[in-house]
Image (cartoon, rainbow, N blue to C red):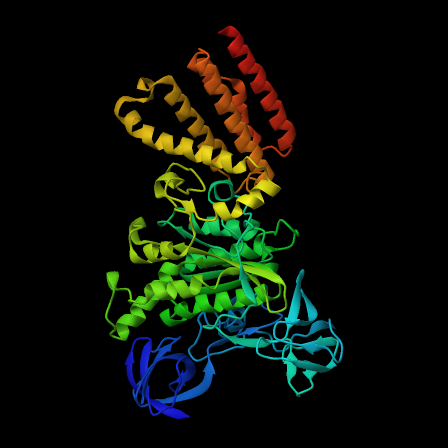
Length: 576
């Protein structure tokens, strides 16, 4: 099925005389550039090409592969670094050096490497899509080899031993051969038995996230913020510390130097759970801003399909997309080449639908085999000039349930993570309340709401303070400002590079917040009893509380500080 090139407009090529279906992969030009059919009108097909189209001329040949854009799923995914269409970058580097030549392809999974396969079933077993037929040990992760979703039958033969990803390890009675590898079209979500309610939080170890704005496993979150506000560091903290087994990191249209930092740093990061390199449970998809825009559009689908594959094994997966703004910009460029009617700020009218399609593939699910798995999607958004009213941020906010708003003013004041607690929100707090009651403490939701109320009051009082100074306020309001400062500096601020403070477990977060609120209660009671504000705010134990979060023997040190606090307030009350 061959045709010819009719018209070229950047990454969009019109071809004629070749029968196609929507989303067929075609090879364009003499170099066989990879492209995907995105429109059909009569004998003409519109193709978005995933490589640079300069030099292609009308009349060059076009060949239809009659296959959808698919990814290879199997052993070898973990530790890999791919581009947006799952070409392994280290393999391409060996072939041609630092710059990728056009028309070059390489399989997503190594065809030579052998994997030790251990069967989990025997001859005569009935299997259906999603059932685990055996396992392969890949790094410290057990890679479960599954029956493809659209296959079912009775096992006629199953082998054990060392195999490449293309060798048959299991044969069904109808002669269907199963290998360690399966393929799946990226634009189609993998089927599940049912979606579950998100009722378990994703523990990140970051106090402002876990404490005030939690995300559920299988949930969706957005991190919008201007340049330099800490999006990438926050996402790296989430990748390193969140309690998921698998991490998929998509660098979608990021600057080359930022992506180089990620590629250099991730292999050196140690996984705190296992002590092994973090890369051993990570798949990186690197699509920098100088790569073709069409491949940028495909990269998020490649990443979410790989995430769904590991979810189907029964794993909890976190997917970091950095950033969806660059993806939207790619859609805008392709839309303009297609001469489509532009929407707000030139983005295509279907921007919201595409964002929804992507985020809706997140979720906590019961897999086809009956296991429980989840994909949590955390998308960074890079609004131009930090303007949260622009279309990508606004459309993302309509879809996601957690909003972590990064603030450049906080980062300039060296407050990290620089997440604005007044603009951020989480819609999972009610759904997760039972989990917090059972695993942390029944009074955790009350502590959280009290802290948010104090921070809100501080914001309202700041306007008066800027006009007349804090000394002009009534003493109870001055005390509110002091407690708000403690919440900000003792609880919300966190040092990502400190051995102890980089991760804070939920129990520690609860005790730290409880200690701050204990000071608040004691201080307000003493103030009502006639004590001097200066005596209340100058207690030594209050300042000692700021150092406790950096201590390895946290519980022991905290008890000493709380005991000292009781004595100091007893002395203050006795002096009244």
